[in-house]
Image (cartoon, rainbow, N blue to C red; front, side, top):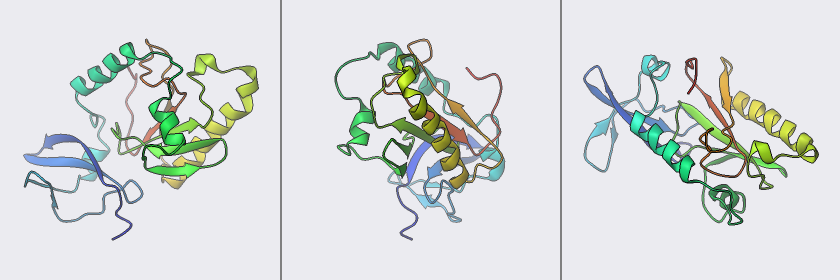
Length: 190
């Protein structure tokens, strides 16, 4: 069972009179067929495919509002960001890909059944701060997102998101691409 590593739980919700919890790990799929015990004593069942693929699978509005509020308070500073600390390994992350230019890791607050980020190792604060000299790196980030999405079995498609600036709800000023998949995305976003 070593492959059932790093379960991250979030997005508790109710459906059909059962409590479900999104569980992350083992190639982003929860292959647990029996109830999962929690510290609170409640058990959480495996999420039915119909819910995972639902357009309504997301966090609550209050969580989304919190993220927007965080973005409004975020500022570009000379201080290392949380992503810089992930790059230098001073804080842990569930890293799923790394090379000399970038790394990819699972989001700690997933907004879809599959949600990971791709970040450059060099700290570019945001897309609007990218220069012509960053052209090769930006292309590399997109190709890395594609390759990791293939490894995560997102053959039916996925969404890439880059939040830029306060109105774009950028909460961490280190360029990052969100890759979301594993269900039908809705339109329009935001």
